[in-house]
Image (cartoon, rainbow, N blue to C red; front, side):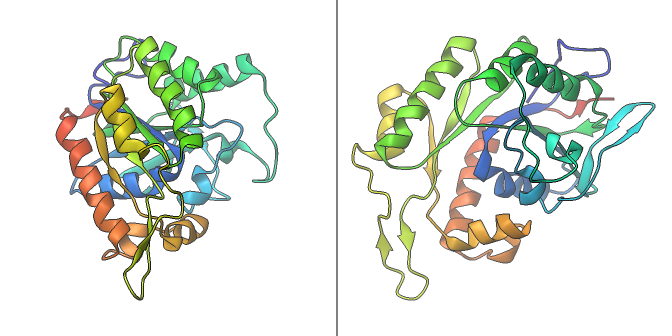
Length: 268
């Protein structure tokens, strides 16, 4: 969610940019781009673990270069994707890079990808607070990023890391759109009984969000179909539209959109 970019002349962003964590990307992107005429870009900066090509059903695709820069790989006419995964000879190839080389590629993604006009640019980041996060925070400084969507699971071992990520965002000046609790209970598809597979021993994400005074966006129940759709590169919202998890995604999506009103961005 950017309104102005401080990087290079090629990129003038005047719309919205989200920083979003991994497993939510498939559903978030498909949810956003279902709106008529909504143009969405998805930038994967998980350099060492680029799973977005698999999640979006784009394994084996390649990036093409033209006079205007790198062309993103399109899932549909209004959904373009860029990832280091498209640059590898095999999805099994390891990316063994130190910080400076990672930083250089992220800068190139921001500067040289010809997205066209976008309503949303979503950036998928790896877990943690390392090189990729520092780079994106530095390169987008002053660009009016709307904020980060932070994803956790209910147990304290996950919340420990997420508290650090919230603190990171606060220190580098990235607003926090909100926190999502993923894998929040399992609803049996037959008896509809809910079980806590990962018990929230310290109160879960909603209590953590309240303690840290950040918005809580909602809970997504554990659903095996989510993992299956990611493995197969399919939209969970299309495959299982009436499931409890799909309904939860719709509610979370509405909260995000309501909190981030913006204009179309010109990235030509």
